[in-house]
Image (cartoon, rainbow, N blue to C red; front, side, top):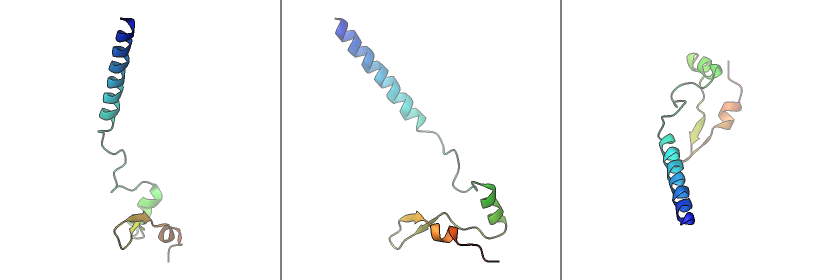
Length: 75
């Protein structure tokens, strides 16, 4: 009898944890994609020198635009 109540307790705790994790995943994004993340990005956007963070290849997959972001801006 004691083992049956312990199993029920473990299952109920597991269900509560699963529900808590699933409800926590339904939040909206903390940082929207269309807003600048840093003051430097905002500065570049205002002056028309914004460089996107990702680029698309010929198959439509995204990759970080490292070369574009690391080249010095032209004056």
